[in-house]
Length: 504
Image 1 (cartoon, rainbow, N blue to C red):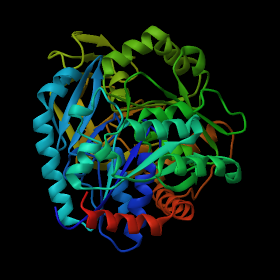
Image 2 (cartoon, rainbow, N blue to C red):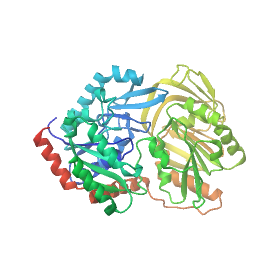
Image 3 (tube, helix red, strand yellow):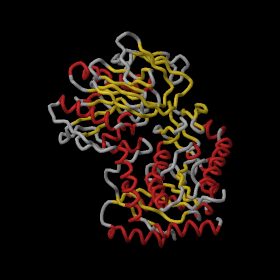
Image 4 (tube, rainbow, N blue to C red):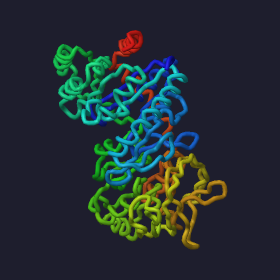
């Protein structure tokens, strides 16, 4: 590992902002002419990304690669952990399912194998890139786990990377969490901390300054930046913690009300991100039947455990409310991946992939049945979608362990993929289902869908909506410029070089 200059971001807790800060540095280094790669050795997330060779990695690393202007590979996230049921997760190694494991077994049986996998990926990236932006997970001060952890200080040691500790001031107690984290680190690991960044700041910096001065004097660790909270940043979130910030209530000031079912094992929830950037749309989350209301667009997103999440909807009364909504109101209902499977007549699980339950009845809104299989499909896809009498070229990606088959002659395919029917829809285009994630990222189709809703409500259509890819590229630039303004980049650059010379 001789070439790439590494920097690592660790946090005081999950959702401290490590991913977004790492994304900013990927963009900044790339803008400065450095060939840059992101790296997260082990990622626990139900929000994934499919590489060009059809492999599955954490979505954050895929997005960070986009920010850096490089093609995402599985070396950037060699181990992905996807919780699937209580105390059990699917372990993805280099983009392919390895096995389902419980936490204790993973910690005790997988550690050495994981260490070897991580070391090899680090070696590849360190020899192919100029800069390596490494992200930790959770907190490096989890003293009950540190003897066999695979994602924080052990990785920093492997890469000989200096570490910047990120603290989230929005939650309160940022100085206590930063100081506590530093004090719980081993002395050698604490020497790797070249500074801290305080993230998500709102307010008058002058009022914070006494705390910053105290922190530096007390710990001897410099504050390398205070990054103000950045509103309306349309960059994919890494995990479902970010969903806590979304509303459950209708916004009467928006023309189009979009409800998204938030079941316990919701996955790839970033499918709805393009709607967050649309000025006439309000996206809200639904966890109870009472919250559903009468949305214009109802989305059943992906799920890591479709059967358990369908049972959840039935128990909460949401399933019944969806059927009432379909019968008595004009909502458009769209199911993506697991949500698509739920719209069918039944889901079979003969191999116990998700639960001991062999079969469950679906919502019966589309004439299909799904059989869950042991083999996972991960592929980039494209096809011709037909909606409201128009045809659209759409691109997306598929991540699923089920195969859905039509039941009768009423089946109408939603997308034509090289002559093969994919997905399904109702005759009136009010119920749509597909395995294509990123469906709504296709601008022309999204515009047609929203204008169809607007016409139905007696509103004038809106044409020329902004490309979501353009919005995201602008977001990368906006984020990078924002961080550069509030972080001491020259000092960080100097510390990165000095750290390697000192060879800690």
